[in-house]
Amino acid sequence: METIEEECGDLFAGEEGPQTKPRPIAVKVDQIFSLLFMSGMDHLLKGAMVVLLACGWLVEHEQSFLELHSHLCW
Image 1 (spheres, rainbow, N blue to C red):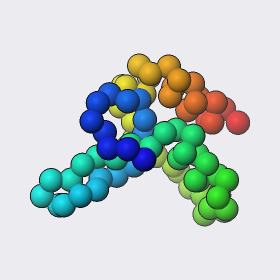
Image 2: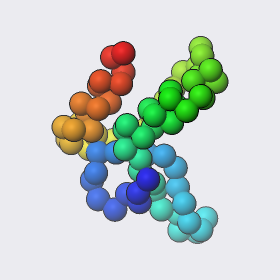
Image 3: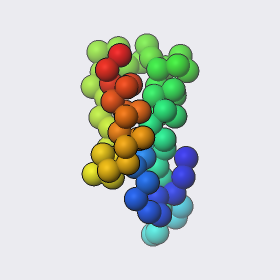
Image 4: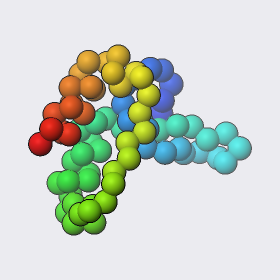
């Protein structure tokens, strides 16, 4: 995970820090899908709708976009 300080093309994963000044956290596409589908949590997602919060920078960064596309096309 990393703090979003620039346009990185990663997925939004939440915020950290004090409530008065939280910092957005980004996670690489592969990390999110590994956590969801390869960590034994996949049974919790059966029949669920997964919502990914992403901005246009995901598409602007070709590697991130291709990783997302490859995971969604399985």
